[in-house]
Image (tube, rainbow, N blue to C red):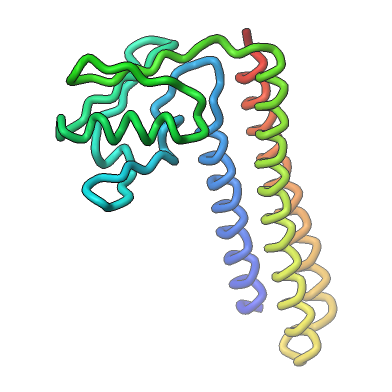
Length: 187
């Protein structure tokens, strides 16, 4: 019995991580509001090394439509600007020699619809990851039954428990998706 519980506990943990990972991915999708998480994926060429922007500067959102980036090393400002311009965030930096400002424009209706598609794709990847975890766990349960380490009743109970867990995680993911879509479509 404890092997089955271990499998279910492992699946529960991995599914939880999939939901968290998807939630984190959502953070890097631009909405109408300024959020330092928008710049999480940006890496800067800092003295020949690709370094995450958040390790080179303080990123803050002093206003709803403005991000400020204050570099720890003033000589890296040009590299930071270049990295932002080359990234896929679609923002143009302006600097005054010490602080880089990124003003976040209003999203057009067309752009909002594109972003909703992007978010739905990210959510679908999360659902697929959850279903893959379920599939792997089901496979392990069948192997246990075939090896004689678990009875058919135990396997059936564990499978229904696993299905319930999968449905809960997918539902949780859908709720996060719905909130993100509402945030993007909010004018």
